[in-house]
Every structure is written in structure tokens, then in C-alpha cells.
Length: 318
Image 1 (tube, rainbow, N blue to C red):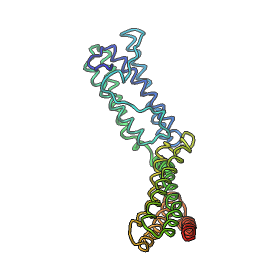
Image 2 (cartoon, rainbow, N blue to C red; image 1 turned 90 degrees about the horizontal axis):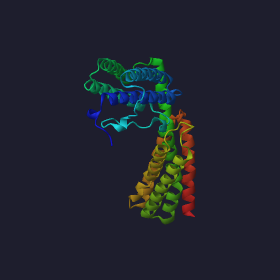
Image 3 (cartoon, rainbow, N blue to C red; image 1 turned 135 degrees about the horizontal axis):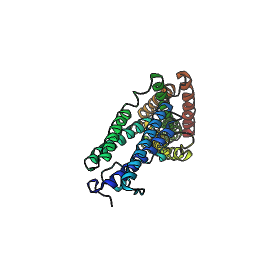
Image 4 (spheres, one colour; image 1 turned 120 degrees about the vertical axis):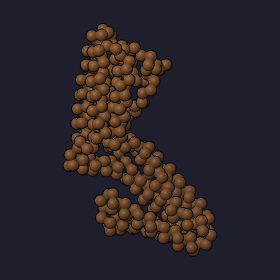
């Protein structure tokens, strides 16, 4: 059962402070390690903060020993009511710089408030002085956490923004684009084969819907299970799988919806128009995010789409 902070003794407050400083120091070390390859400048800032947390812990241990002896009870944040639950850093790879900065800000603000409350509970002059000094140090850390981006030079900030963009491409754009291409192209053959075989818009819609949903589920699981991101840095597998699955379904649904129209010729014309728009969007995304020349991207996508489209018509008309 968690204790109320107001029920803690001076000895327990100091023990809790030692535990918090140790935990924060190790979290900052994890931040630095997780950011070192992609965000080296921010990693160095967290290394400096980790070193300061280690100094705080040493000062607290020295004061504790002078007051209460050698044994320090293990009192952790989860043992006392009111503390924020911190997500395990080692489970998150790759680390997102904005998430890390926000968590550091929350941790420092919480610790500063802890020292402010602790000052009201202790009476020993030496302990009060130490807690007051640590409260001021945590206040400075809060300012650092809030202004981490401003502490970076323009060149370093540009490098980290470029790295963040690369992670966004790996985690969201790339699997989403793969899904959109698969959904837009692979569903063309069954959809138009059913349309030309039955000449019935409703039947074509049912086939297109089934193909889109099925392809979305298949692509989502394939992406999620293909790579856990631990070595490639491509992010959480289920986020990639969700992006890929949703975009696959969306790509197929787009040219399926026109077959809700009752007139076959109108539905077919509208579906062809939607396909053209989809291929144009795919070409633009490849040009915008994948640094592929627009004409080259358009040619590659259009050729593939046309071949699948023709295959569907030939199969449906046979």
C-alpha cells in the first residue's frame, strides 16, 4: 500500500530523495544513450544532467549517514502517493526527441515540488539547507528541460530536425506509402475484373471492399511482424503496421466507392478518375518525402497501375 507523503518521517523523506535522484540519473543516462546516435547534442545535455543528479544523490547520502546511520531504506516513487508514473525508457526505441524533452520537463518539475513540500516537513537545519539547495538545482534543471531546443546551436538544431524528419519517414511515411501503393494498385485487378465480368456495380463494390479490407489486414500484419525496429530504428512495429494497414485499405476503398453508383458506365468512369488521382498522390508523396524526381515517380507508379488495370479488364472480359 502506498503511503501519503505527509505521513513520512524526515528519515523516510531523505531516503525517498536519494531514490528519486538515483532514478532520475539513470533515466537521463538512458536518454543520453538512446539519443546519442541520432541527436548527439541533446545526448550531451542529458549526460551533464545525469552527472548533476549523481552529485545530488551523493550529497543526500552524506547528509543521511550523518543523521541516521548507514542503512538507507528502499523507498521508491511508487511507494508514495502522488508521483507521476514514468514510462520505462528502455522499452522505447528509437527515442523521440520531443517525447524525451517533455518527460524530462515533467520529472524536474515534479522533483522541485517534492523538495518544496519536503522543506515544510523537516526541522534539522543542515537537512533544510541541503533540500533548499537541491530545490534550486531542480528549478534550474526545469528551465534546462523547458529550453533544451534553445540551448542547441542553429547548425545542431538543423541536424536534429533532419534526424527527426528521417525517423518520421521511417516510422510513418514509408510504411504508409507502401500501404497506399499496395492498396491502390493491387486491388485494381480484382475490382475491375469483377466489374467487367458482372457489369453490376454492387457486385464490383463488394469485391473491391473485400479486397481492400483484406489487403489492409494482410499488409498491416506483414509490416508489424517483419521488423521490431530494434536494429533498424524504424520505430514501434504496431505503429508502422497500423499506418501501413490503414493506408492500404484507404488506397483500395478510394476507387471502390464509385461503384455505389447504380449506373455502371458512370461508376466505371468515376473509378478510373479516382485511380488517376490516387496515382498522382502517390507520385507526389514519393517526390515530396522520398526525394524521387516527380516525373520518374509518376512514370513508375503509372506504368504499374496501368498494367494491373489492363490485367483486371482482360480477366474480367474473358
